[in-house]
Structure formats: C-alpha cells, structure tokens
Length: 247
Image 1: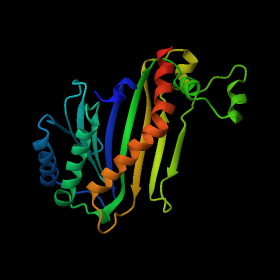
Image 2: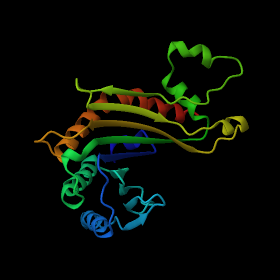
Image 3: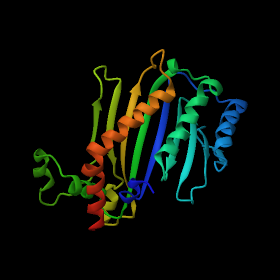
C-alpha cells in the first residue's frame, strides 16, 4: 500500500480541469468519451446522471479502492481513492486529459484552471474543531479567545493559499474541512464523521502555445508531492492522526 494509507483512513488523488466554455452534453459525445475511458478501466461500469445534470462514471464503492470520473457543465474531474500506486492514478488522469481535446473539443486555450489535488480523510467521533486546534495549535493571538471560560470552538478550519511563481498563475492551497456543527456541540452528541485535508496545486489560465494538458499535470503532480513531503505530511497529517489515536 501507499505510505499515505498509514496516515489517514482514506486518501485520494484528483485531477480537475475547469474550462472557460461550457462542455458538450449531448448523448453521443458524453457516452463516447466515457466509453473510451471504460475501455481502459472496465471496472468503471456504474454510470448515472446526478439531479443537477452532472454525468458520473465510477467503480463500485465497496472495494476499498475506487476510480471515478465526472463531467460538469464547465469542469471535468478524475479521481482515484486509496490507490496502491499514485503512478496508476496519474495514468488515469492523463488518459482523461489525452481524450478531452478530441472527444470533448477542449483545447489548452479553453483552460480556466487545471488542478492536481491530494486529499486525506480522518474519521473521528468528537468535536472536529477542537481536535484540529489541539493537533495543530493556534496563533498566540487566538489563545486568549480559545481559553475563555465557558467557550468551546465551533469552527476552526485553517486554510492558506500561496503563489508558486511571480505571475501568481501557479498556486498551492492547503485547506482543512471539519464537519462538526453547533447542534452537535450543544447536545454533546458527535457521530463519527470525516475531517478532510486537501492540498492542491493549481495552474490558472490558458496554457502556453507549446504546452499540453498532460505535461502540465505531470509538473503539478511533482510539485504537489514535493510540497506535501516538505510541509504537510509531518506538520499536518501525522499530528492529526496521532491526536485522534489518543482519544
């Protein structure tokens, strides 16, 4: 298994391509594109349309791992949950990007943003926001508020976005999502839900004339994993896992 499996209950590799123009949604085009992906991944046999009109193709959800793909009005998403090998996830994302210019008429000029995202889910029954504050700490300026008599944290979701180049077109974003609400705190009843950590490296805007979706995604993946290893794994993921383990 991948090393991330020892840190989180679930982890996943996603690719998101946001387009400036609306994607085609006619029956022949959508099914032709999804059938091409299914040809490479025959276990992706579950196809359905969401109430909002999004198209989804996915593997069964009860296998521990899952590949999935969705088409929204202006976004294409490719994901792989709990992969043994992140290179295999990248191959799936690259297959999708190789096909979109020909089957969905998406050119690098039409790119609003291209993302490579790693996500991590931690199951926890308790106040998520208190847990995150305990695991990661807070700024000195906030400690007084946190220590007020009778108070309890209701929302603590650290997030930061950084520019990775002088044009600000390549950015990295770290976001922590908690799912505790005020009703649960008031009742003292906390069902087991997921704390999620998302780390995304995004390229904004149309790609350069000599650039491709595939080469850009490979560069985003490399930079994402380098930053994860340097600044997120030991600083964010492991403290969350260790704090949950002590509860």
